[in-house]
Image 1 (cartoon, rainbow, N blue to C red):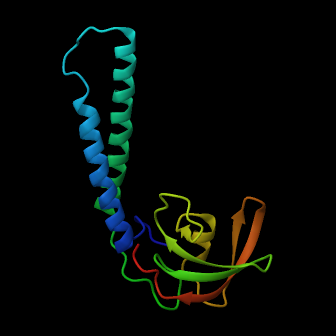
Image 2 (image 1 turned 90 degrees about the horizontal axis):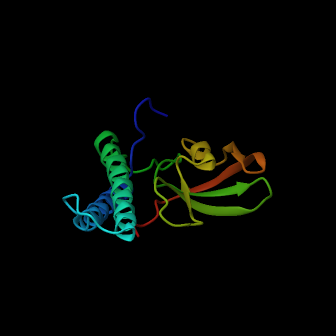
Image 3 (image 1 turned 45 degrees about the vertical axis):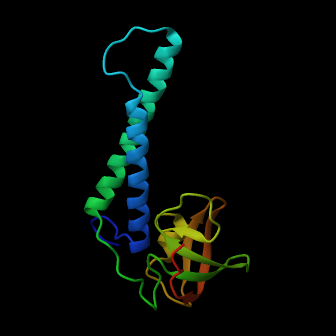
Length: 158
C-alpha cells in the first residue's frame, strides 16, 4: 500500500460528502435547541440538555473525521482491470468451496453482503491481486484462504 492515506473511490467520495452535509444539518438542528445562557431549570431539563450536548459532540467528532479524510485522501482512479482495487467487483472462492461476488469499497453504512471494505481482513488481502491468486487472511475462526476467481467491471453506482 502507500505511506499516506489510502485513495478514496469517486463513489465513496460522493457518499462521504453526502454524509457530511447530513451531519452538518443534524448538528445545526441539535445545537439550536441548546440554550445560550445559564438558565436554571429542573433536573429533567438539565438531563435533556446534557443529552443534546453529547449528541453535538458526537456529530462534531464524525464531522471532523470526515473532513480530515476528504482533505487528506487522494481520489482513486478507476480500479485496474487486472488487479483488485477500490471499486473492483471480485468473485472469490473460499476455502470451503463456496463462491461469492463482492465489491471492494471503503464505506459500509448498512450491512451489505456484497460489499467488502478495503480495511477488512479479506479486503486488505484481496487488494492488488488478480484472477487465480490465492490470498490468506484472518477470519473469526482463524487464518483462512480465498482464491480470486475473476474480476468483473466495477459495480454501477447505487
